[in-house]
Image (cartoon, rainbow, N blue to C red; front, side, top):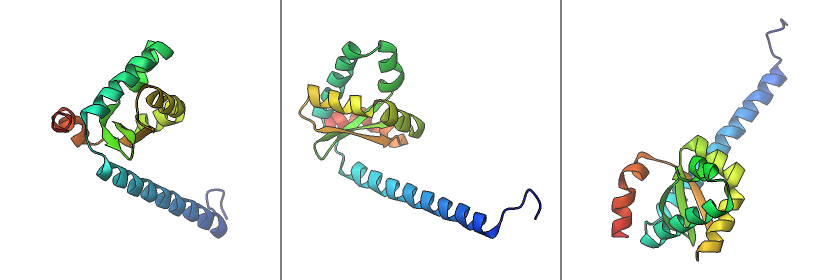
Length: 135
């Protein structure tokens, strides 16, 4: 066996890990699709998101708000929680770095129980204001 070849057991282990990652991503996509389907745009959600951002400005460095929170788009509410969208990389980072802070802040300034961070779609960018005006 050359130094660049891998054993059959190592190849099987890698394949198993890749399969588990594909299954994890599929489950995550299905969960997000269910949340997105249940999310309905409302003016109350938009107002609560504005209050959340205002409160965050008084709690953390304004540069953090500008960098991590202002780019998020409020797309509505679902199951008693706010729904906001961000690009996939931003969604992961915001969730990891600031998810708990966002949840606490939403609960402090509104009647919502928490927040759902969803991956942004083109629809989120083009219909946000029109949908919320109807809501």
